[in-house]
Length: 398
Image (cartoon, rainbow, N blue to C red; front, top):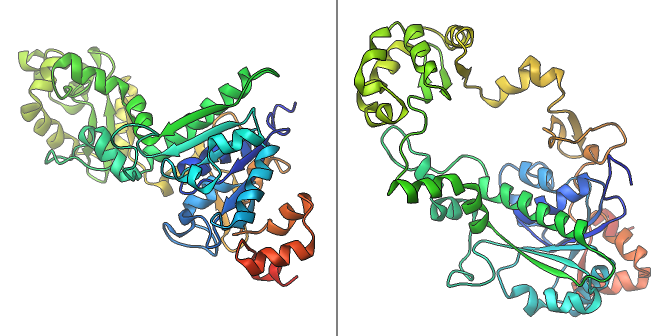
């Protein structure tokens, strides 16, 4: 087993769409697994979310590097049979249909287990396979709203806001990978298959566990954590300010030029400061506007205060630490171009590594996958004519 590619002997069958399921399978690909992505003839719908660059969007690039793509119409019998044939040799299968749809299509867990008794079957959904909301469609925004995540991301006017990143989808992909990896690690020759219910709702509740516990124990919305920690405007931008020790509040007051606040009983500790942010907050806001972000950060760090300038992505990419540690190595994708791609912690990209392999075009490897399964050109032509298979124009005409 290679440390860089620990899953190089595994086969993953990915019939999921969107981001969570494909991201789960995509992590396996980055660790060396042979991942075959089955897409509908028009391609995975995530290829159409966001700005398109040929067959790709940023989301589809992140979720599908180093995979092989084949386009099959699962409403056709021969396509379903082909999926079951691929499942026979797979170690892990990932799907993201609404609960019950995979079974109706003939590619659910029970059908797959018949041909692959030891399969690790990952079913990604919004609200899980059971319960009153099982059939309810769930997107990242829906789950952020349902889970309470938006309630802990309030603006100055107290309006709850969606977090501007795919937190439920991304964490579900990671948790699903984690669960499947654990199942693989514990599998032996006697084990039967396992069904993993990886749903966005449960994922975000696990992610928010400290906040949910606080809500219960405090009898309502948790108080502001470590007040006056937060984001503040400066003379030329914004800074993020954090406190983990009571002593740091004294240091902040000294830096801001308001040492008298330290002896004010309203601001004695984290709890009382949280209760009086309506009076403390405006003072901090007023003082921070008097200097630039760079000046404040330098001063705060000299006083052992946790703070940093609030970056945009351009600032982050240009940062000397990001560049020196190669946190976002450059990759090249046909029809897209060359761009930085942040790596997963613990991966060590080099020229021969899977991390540098691009995502596939829609159906790019269809002919290759079918040939390996023993299909002839006559078989491929028949599938094309029946609508069971779709190939890229160049490949279809070759």
